[in-house]
Image (tube, rainbow, N blue to C red; front, side, top):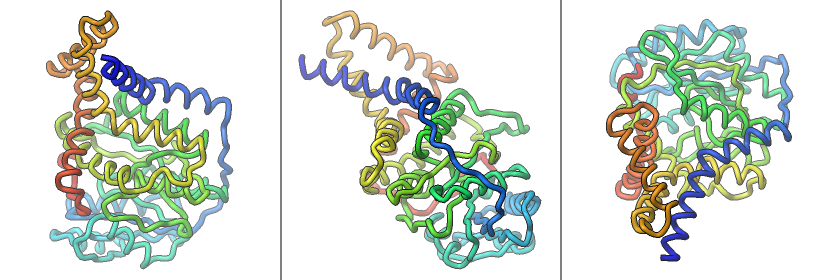
Length: 363
């Protein structure tokens, strides 16, 4: 029973650390040890890249939104890099005034890489076809590049309902709080595809299966640079219609995360503090599903060996019951946590495709 007890306490400790203690520690440290980012008003030339696959329903609106940004038009090039779209995406993009780069079907990252090779802006900003940026988003995004140490900047994604109301939820606000603290301490450990930018001189062509959201921040740090968060650069996207749709989206996302964690050599040449960030926020978070399975199994095995194990089992069963009957936060947490397990199974069984399809209900 000693081994089982050790597994219980290790899994419990890891879960409490990644979900509770690490965010609190990061927030506290960010107040004590802030590494400021120098900002400025310079307006570098920017290539705005929209990777698109069959986005005819939203591409005109997306280009119109980007053309309306508060940024000198002679310093911005809007590029739609099409992953062999089979609908009217390319024609509509050209009609809207964007430069269209056509690619054979190879996935989002391959299309982004091609666009970077074919353009010349000092800064490359990326966004999704279903996003909308606030008018000042690009100015806010690029001002951190006045700091010579900064290589990558991600903005703030605001999740909205069908009628435009805010639908961020507790989890997303919690995640953004951790991201802000990590940025103040050193660098973020992840971004989002709706709004981010990188200096051209720092751009890295990554494995097409990996994606930029998780791979760019740690790669920048490995090169002695910083990846920071700019909450004033706002993007907006429609939320997935149901928690089940969000579950399927998370499974697809976590498949790519597992590929990076297991193949991407994330832990090499990282500054000690950033290494703690990556292990705490990424590795342990993605392992949450496995840790919960260990915790549940050991709690059952240790039932009758102490009140703490009975309490732990009762709490776990309570959360599962609440999720089963549809209580909001427990249901979301259980589905997202299980998505980490399902995605690992998918990755080990089938690998990860480089190509992608638009998420249902978010257009």
